Image 1 (spheres, rainbow, N blue to C red):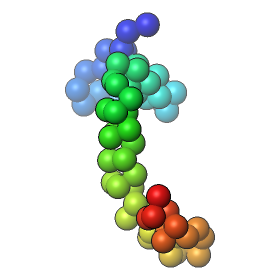
Image 2 (image 1 turned 180 degrees about the vertical axis):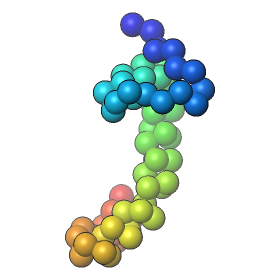
Image 3 (image 1 turned 30 degrees about the horizontal axis):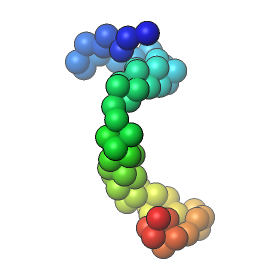
Length: 67
């Protein structure tokens, strides 16, 4: 199964379609590339998690940051 063709700026109909698209893309990447992508996403989302953690008094930001 090849990568689903999605036109730039086109909306996907649901999260399942996005998951299929992302999996097809990531399957073509090396383990090092997938690791780098995961690390970049974690860094990108960390500030949001920190705000959520403070607002909800949930989780341990310091522990997550050490990972």
